[in-house]
Image (cartoon, rainbow, N blue to C red; front, top):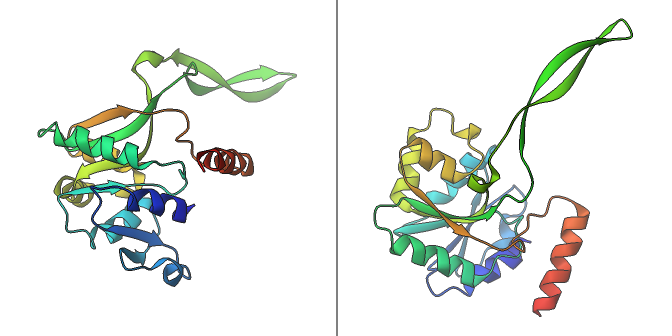
Length: 200
């Protein structure tokens, strides 16, 4: 999946270099003339910080290789969005949430003379305002560096956009198709393989 993502970035006119944060034992497998490999960290933010150390460009794209359906067109569209918004710190790929989202809490009740716990609905969110964040996420490099440095607990961020938001930066959304799926199960991998095969 890393190779699929790297191939997509290599096909982008706007990409000057690629940095992969890899676990121990995999670094030599990936290295190439246009690709630097750095050690991954214990957390996502640690890995991004390690990779940023090898970045010297104005913009940086952060991508999770668990999304192997990345296209060069998506990367270029994100870069164009950021180019067109000089006051923005970044732009992320995101999909509108299709499901009804419930916010829940735990409640206790008695049944058969025993105390039981169950989740209960606290509220239903307005899904017209909800977007599922994806990658790639493109940032002004200094804005991401500052956000990483300013965060008291960067490991609590589930994506880089959250760090930039915490630091007061404006992050834009670029709507994407459902095909930018994340591979988390064997079924996801099979679907990704089929979709990639269709692309040739």
